[in-house]
Image (tube, chains in turn yellow, blue):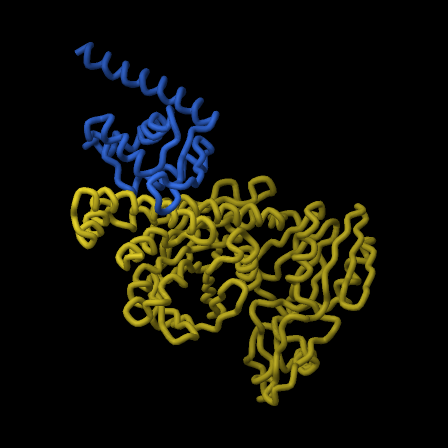
Length: 412
Length: 109
């Protein structure tokens, strides 16, 4: 294929992926081929025919912009559909005093770290109390995990007549309504190593809250809700509990950001080359693989974006998720110079963040005006925020999410 | 060349009308629009393909790949669906009513 035509096709299908990308490429190729033949039949040489054809076609970005808007936005709508598995509802009537509080830790629940937490040497959310250098080196939070002790959860579940059956790490829950759910304790897919390259084993009684949420979400007949920012309240069927205590508070931000990550991983985006940048954890994921990366804060000019909250929501307590499709246009040009072959690999990136509403209901969040992401394979990508979608994670059931369309979002 | 604002509102009607009698592929649609209107409707690919895909998403048309009769890459032929045909009839009636009323306005001057 002619190099200029190839470049046109790449550019015109930028932002699409998978089968849709291949189909549009094939359709456009046939189109280009038709135009080229017409010029060749008219007697012009091949080089001129290509030039004339590309001129006829116009800017490839016009095709890609229209296609991406058409095919990407509904995919993100699909994200919202997937979210319906986990209905995050605001239970304004449930207060912290009514739900039992369960202590949790965001640190890796190895014996060493749990002991340190128990002795008060390591608080759940801060490192300022740490005196022991070993703890600094070995007790860190992994991703956005929140670990809970199963024994404390068990007490709460049994009090509400939930039957529990444990087989190895597999936990089966039978709710009074007759509905069942399964989740797994411990950690079988990630390992954390200490300074001596020894695995820091997870206490077998601990489990990542995500495992429970995933397990419950697989049965859509079991109501599931997570609400609030500080010490969020989890409601599963007829059981409610609060994560974190007044002594060991837990901020829900990390959890909700994990949630956005997970939802993106679980939606129709699976199997595509999609990069997800989570600035809070400074991690960049390629679907199916974890990619270490660095979001260079010094290069990120934060811009504050005021948004109107979706109607009929508890604005001041609302939990909002924001998915920004990063515009990698410049990145691709930048990469092209040094790594021509890598251009097509970086076809999408999402910037995920969460936002709180102020008391007067306005939502303000920070987005990168421009940023640099350093990939492990040695080159940098510059990006700027493109279209953004605001997802209301805490509306009442039935209108539990609202999507603010990109054109409604104003950058100031 | 048609006024862009007017074109935007009638693009669906134009594309559906072109596909009414037989399935066609992208380049053929551009050619037909141009020929049948003496060059008045001259689409660019940047507006044609997103519009075709949007109509397909709305199930008004359906695209299917078929070998090209001229050889080379397969072409994607679009044809009207039942739903598309009804939509076209409705759009056409609406357009005629609209056009008639605008004419009446001018006539009333």
